[in-house]
Image (cartoon, rainbow, N blue to C red):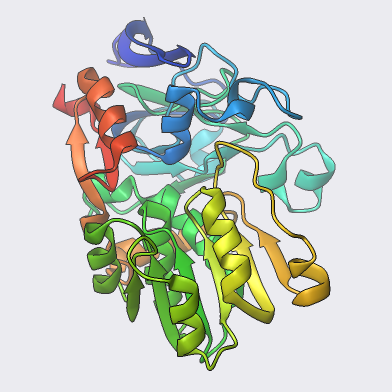
Length: 364
């Protein structure tokens, strides 16, 4: 462990609303493991729903078993500097002490049918940093990448607060890849949060015919325009379905990407999309959504895709941010020290003047 302290400050999740800043043992690397000093860790919508207990399936209920295994240090949108390498880690990952590094949010088991077929992001065990105690997350001074992790070196030229956007941007890239946007497509992205805004920037790189963004907050719509949106619509102020149909000769959009996590956005998308269109769902919902499935089949024969995590997309996200092809700097609106985690979660949850909130332990 060299000069690393024996203990560190960490935010520990025990239950909804029961998050505590504690002094815990600093992780030590075993074989093929890496320890980083955390530079920054973003808070995502899933983190907020876990904190507030509004996502029933996270803590148990409905048809799924509990996803969160507490006590656990939360945080899966992290970036840090390598401070310790276990036996074999240097050779396995090509990392050295002092390198900046990131690990994909999921730690695959590499044994289930999905991992063995290359679909590791759907791993049956499905350990994700910051949600299961087997893989603690990045809301701490130090963090360990466990032996089955997928790790990457990250350029130090990227500011830490922007490097924390690599994970969400990789998710945005995956959703856009699922949409398979073609030249000339009319694309609608519903939701201009951190993920939706990343989708806007990445979709623009695919040169759609028209890129339309829906959101309820003016500041997010303005940023969406800055990132490449041709048209922005506030569905509370205008009839978004009618406007999109007017823009498309009455047919509807070719692609609809849902990134809000609200039931109304799903229903809106099914009304707005044309026959034979492509609907991509990437959200964590607080409640089940009921729709008329005959729209999907009998009436429109839609291509319906889910999108989960950011498989095979981290290298692209790192390159897009490093090169400036996707400018994520404006998406990060607030930075807090670890001690102010309550304010950070509340700021991210309210969304009134925030888009992405990042915790930086070094500010403590």
